[in-house]
Length: 347
Image 1: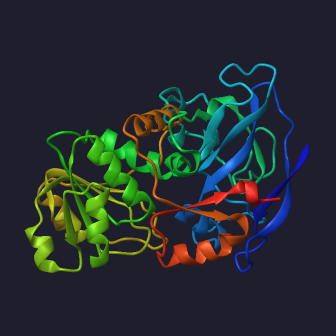
Image 2: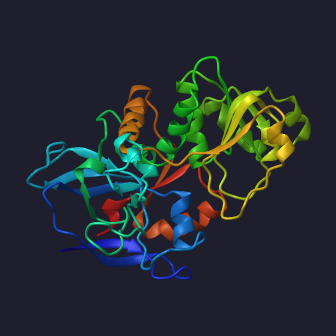
Image 3: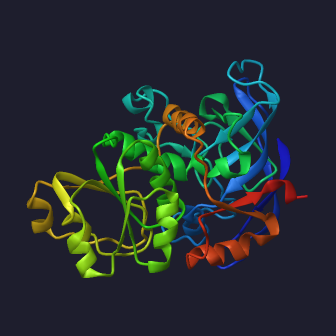
């Protein structure tokens, strides 16, 4: 076992602080990664504060991890020392169920092993995430980061990118399709870029009039102020709406904008239940759906897609000792559009 410096917390009421954690020795299929950068996702904040329940303390969050391979196990074939790699939410799964065989490890029948705050199915204990100097991961749950992607702004692709890419691909978004994006934050700004690159017509819904100009710069064709009923009524009917908001909000106004057979797809994770009117769904044979990250192969796919289309996240790069302030700003939406922690500042 190896001791590793990390940044985490021992309680929902305590600030994040430096601590020491233990990483396992490499097994034959493991790679050790020296972490360069790790993005901050809204779910990190939820986990630290135990908003969803079930947080195991101490908790070390972080699941948008990029860095260099520094050591490999004896049977590793996919990576070598010096490779630039990434780790997202999933670090293990049962590998035997239909979902795992189909490359949908996120839906594993036995439950995926999440990179942090998850029971380690093989080695015991609780997993620790990317706010650390180094991490040890089975090679089958590691992805290659294309050399053309800037490392710090590529980190959010490991969660924000795959979280929006997977449903856009699943619902066949492309040329001739009209897609709506609800919310202009870490997920929303990536969704605009990716949907635009797929060839779709993109409408952004935001509660902030000041974000309209940004949405257009990011690639939105139309921007609708969701608090303006007249603008909502005037919106074009859409094939799909991707809802990225992680706070309680009204879904019904968006369902009413869908075309017949259209889908409102949730990827944001509010802590409170959301209400939906049955008549709004029944009229037009509309669907309320959800999507949860993507499998390992699809995560590699979105990295390659982003490299091909020169897509990265708009980030604010911060040192480790700014994480608590970043969490406070994230809670009030004061970020355009993703914090990324420079893990090299963890001495």
